[in-house]
Length: 139
Image (cartoon, rainbow, N blue to C red; front, side):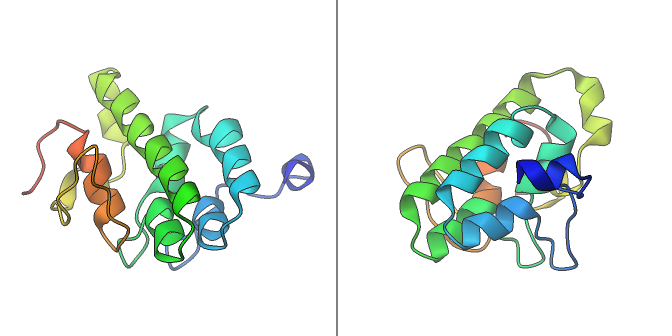
């Protein structure tokens, strides 16, 4: 991945299904690659990170895809990163909201999520993130 980044590959590309590099690495269970993506990209730039952790066309986040494929340790790791990203965004200045993707405001909560009960299914990762983002949203 470092080599791909060094030659100018677009690591932030989102395909027509709504998948970015984190979705694909999570779905395939690549813990090392997911850790590199989270530590090198997701933790550095909020707006780019939201694109990489956002829901795909089937409302699956990277943590959902990992969990649905049985990669539970990876799903937990990514879910914590998704939640931390949204928590940090909710604590940031109000000016950041105008640059946020619409899914952060427009999607209803689909799955009931608590700190001790995380589900791995379509919509659950988004519900997890929205649970920690205290802005006006549909319920």
